[in-house]
Length: 219
Image (cartoon, rainbow, N blue to C red):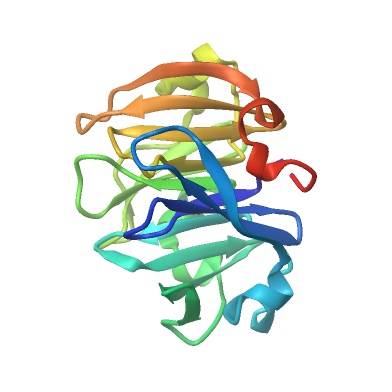
């Protein structure tokens, strides 16, 4: 399964994390075709920051709003803010911190871990976080909840249509167009989330193995 994924700023590439390994997937210009540009590699060998914090795997990785080269990384009950430039990662702050001490809004939401996260389209500072069957929308600049915690089944028609009651990972398409890849178990779907935060199912669920050849043998 895909544990986490993030788009690499300024490139037609995404990082995909599965267990203790990760790979870099490159998309063709303007098309859905993709190939494995690097990996699979152990996190402990390919990243500077993650092993120093004891992150053996990654639960969620998502851009910091307003900072294209910075990422929030979540593992278990901890998170860190890191910087990624030319595939080299470094710390923005002083390592990992408990979610309970750094994200009052997630604590208020009852999220002691994070399954997936994404920037909220049409906003500057807002983010969606997913945990189990629920999701919440937060303002990163104020660390406050924008909407109350709600079941995914009530707020995401596209995921309901796809039959996804929870989310393992979500990542924007390198081609833009408001498209997102959503992973759940051994399947994935493509959804569209516009600037008004309306979501629709673009491509129904398919086995990851049927369309992501770059992930064959390790995801």
